[in-house]
Length: 319
Image (cartoon, helix red, strand yellow):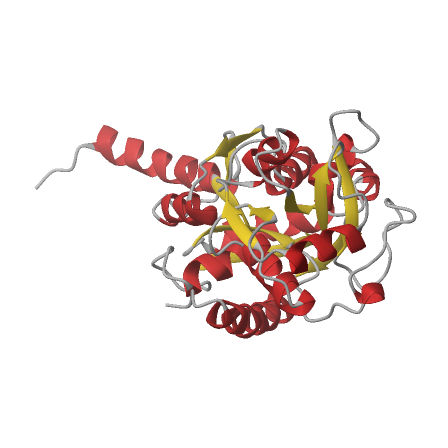
């Protein structure tokens, strides 16, 4: 049988080209899925990190917001996307919570976790015009009339929900906990006085401080006072313990990333975390850089599963 010489030569030429195309990753724009609506804390962190990562990868990174169910809708969509390195996503404690309460039908480790990026503080905020001027006012009102004081969260089962429940338990007060679809809608609700208060990520409320129709922060949930909120007490200073201090953010991808692609991403993510503009964003918004990768990150995730699992069980939301 005679072989078609031209076909053989064409096939031989195509193989190196295909190999070179694969080696060139990334050769086209990427997408970063943020599993919440635009404007919330995770969205702001994701957009800032996308800019830093873009500089390292040399490709544009489009942010795609897919909100719903405390992050579960976007994470479910992400899990079914191609594991080719061109679609990334934002993760955090909300991923662990969504998995443990069954909203996300996947365990937390069913993703390619690339790195933890940052940590931030929860705060309790009220409308600027609220008669609740201090945390003591808030606690007194909540204890005086059970369920009369409403406190908003970013969704049932979200970390803000667990923090609100833990706050009520610590204060021995029955709060009226109401849920909204993400931090942005929660902020809108509190600004419109549709909820008496809300549990926010610090980054969400800083632009609203000292505004006539903005937000007044009554307390921060971290053990140490926030440098961005001088004079604002911590829950610990008020004798309220056992309340989650705040969320963390991470970057991930669908499970099954090819080794060479993961190596490129890992290197780019590591360099992006030292980007001056990224670090300036963290500092401006009172977030702490918190890089963690590899086995240490895996151990951290395992611990989060235990911690958040216990909180979900306490509020009757574990699967």
